[in-house]
Length: 387
Image 1 (cartoon, rainbow, N blue to C red):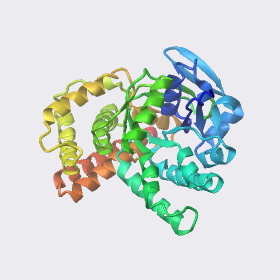
Image 2 (cartoon, rainbow, N blue to C red):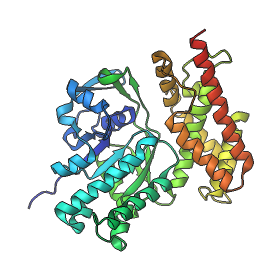
Image 3 (spheres, one colour):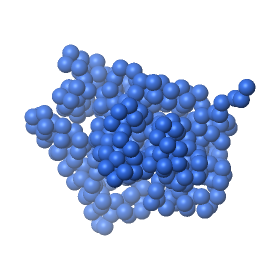
């Protein structure tokens, strides 16, 4: 009897979080490497530069691993489909503002598969897409994908999907909310990607059967993935948003003094008291918005949620928050601008929108003010560089 092919995973694109996923799925760069491939983000020159160098460097716990890019890197998603290499799962770890172009490529990939294999087989081959970038965006991205599919039907690039086929495609769009850590040391193709200790990624959204199948594939490879069979994507997004906003936004406020001097802080230096008024104020407004959009149940206990989230956040106490590492790099390269990073923007903007729509003016004003405080701090850092 012919043995079925082993499942494969694409990580799109190379980056700090993607390298951390690669490291743990390959069990410390020692196994399964032929089954895990980086996929280039279309329009990006970064992976091309790494491929030209010929090696990718990943480190963890003081051990450095050199990966041959010829064996670990693939072109963009559409080109992969045309070349006949289609992974079972694609983990997307772009910046949040790069997600919509990835969705465009995903729909185009379906068009390529339909043209070459027909609809039924094309749907079978279409990979599961796990969006693991930070932010609150699942509902928006899903609507965008449906709009693109409808447009493709309108122009005849795809047949009518408004039957079981649309459900199959949308069912493959999953949300992977992760507390996995990683950071990049250096810039350009010589950068070293450091993977943090293995941490949980919660898989939500899509159809239950796809969610379970995806989780099984990733766990079999050695990753720490858990399927959320009860909570909707917006719930796990809000839970992670609380951690990100505490560590990254409040972390920036704490890391920059009134004179514009920046000091890189670890999570344990930022989150040293669960009863901090600043932490409780942020989580209180976030909780109110979450209840309005049904991320949290009406009877859910705020204090219990606040404390459990604090425990999750402080479990990575020696980690440097990603936005603080980014800020350090921007300061060193003198490219810092007085504006939120894409990650924070895709948290704050949806929260302000939801708050205004729900009539929660105090919450909308709070997050608007938080944005203004951060941008003013960043402006002070920039001004300090030229004193």
